[in-house]
Length: 584
Picture (tube, helix red, strand yellow):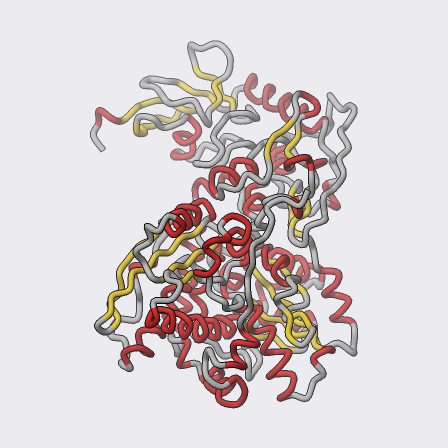
């Protein structure tokens, strides 16, 4: 960048040179000066409402709000002068005055930005304590609990829901002391257009939003000697769980995770990656059939339950394009309660399947009536990555120092293709690996499909398979999904295969993953670190194509028959239908 486009200033006696248009907050972070924030969320909520990031600029009256104030040539900034510190304490005091301060029993105790700021500013008392608003807790939905008593009106959740996901299920309402964040008519999230993606939870700095816990229910089943408790873990969990124990972002803790689950008392510990391999076989077979018959193209993947709920509510006319496949953990749950139960002579009614997922929409998906086999739910409980971490801590397990263990046989063998399901583009890439070899009968020379990798919200590409060219598109985040849906709805789609994930970045950035502060989100590429770990797992796998998984081959031969066949369709597929946006 040319010198003309750079701005020179001084922040806390440090000389800084940054591009024109940079904010004081960004400039300070470049030289490791920490300015506290609450409402700020990079690229999403940069409005300066909370005023916690105020600074002093020499020669100017009043304070400058650093998250929105642009730098100027020769500017001299003080971020921690006595006047600034005192003003910040007063602002925080006012926020705390109407906050329910039951920190010890709060779900975000120890990982709360408000709590951390209070400690940093040495808030030993609240001078302006007064009457507090009392709000009813919304816990009606199967996925999200909304507790406005702990909201600080930062509006980060509102901005994420509107700007990133383009949903607008929640909004700021009221004025003054009556201001709050709520839904249409102050109804439950279960009764409005919420998709349960959980990105609002990831954005929230306090405990105002959190997943609906299944921990106690799972503990009860683990204590019941008459219940055979099986657990399966999604690919994205293993590259994020370690963060809850202070490990580096993106650390692959597969072996420690398996050991911890066995120590918790689960009868069997299986890998949802195997379920992902089944998904590829079924979805790939479905795509090949549709492609040959030119039937309901483009075909759209159905692995993400938040996305499925979105299309059911917003684009029911596009539902014929949706794959009929269940998601991987639902497929695997169905196989456990049919094939596995019969082979091991276990009454399926006594089997309790727990899925550990990076996603809170899976909690909604689990209890859908469509996800049953022989009257039994395929999956009985869903734990988020965060919930599993809480259980491990409750059991006083020293996670960091655990030895590695392997998933249980015969359902624990999976491929690298199953692993990359956790990354945006991973489902598409895994499917293309198998579809290519099934169509051509030849081994791929190049197994990685770079066209569908990367952090872009929408990725388009053309893949040559034999004599055929297949146009593909990958979208992550519901705001990007909307763009693809409009193209299909208007008849402008010129592609044949579509992957959509509700969460920006895919499952590794799911609503049930470890929550990162706004500062970490602004300064660390969490998505890349977790994605790199997923691709490393794939590269190190002995088998990297789903159709080569010997577990799948055996189960199809012994039980399911052909991929896409009658029994496979009965157990591994489902149907989706139009749903109302509002039930009010």
